[in-house]
Length: 141
Ligand SMILES: [Zn+2]
Ligand SMILES: [Zn+2]
Ligand SMILES: [Zn+2]
Image 1 (cartoon, rainbow, N blue to C red):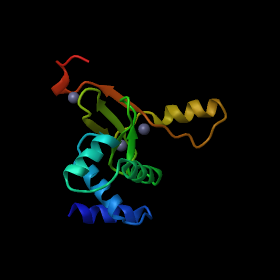
Image 2: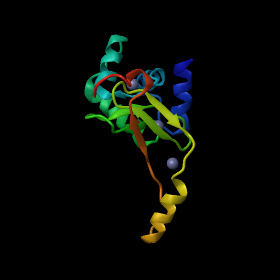
Image 3: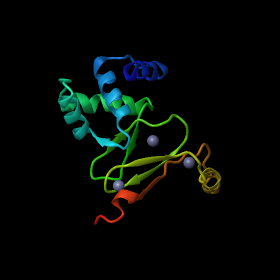
């Protein structure tokens, strides 16, 4: 079922469903938080997918470029996540990589106004909120 969904998602973005892309995307769909390329690579190997780390990076880049997956920058290494296609923000736990997608957005008008002040049009924005989730509240940074 997941592979079928992955195929549909790739087709919608005009990407060929190569075995690498299907494997990477399917694994990302199973992840509720976000994940680094290295951790994803390990997980794929454990699952029996023979794919080099360089291939994982290349595949992730292609998916990011086409807007299929998001990158998150809260850690020392870039994290990746399969999110909903609508405009959203990430509320991310610094400790355990739990990610909550926030669909309500209060930044649109503000971003437009700031842009206009400086003569910009078509202003878009990305906002990441970081914190410690309920499970990690007691844990030290
Ligand atoms: Zn996202
Ligand atoms: Zn946490
Ligand atoms: Zn927003």
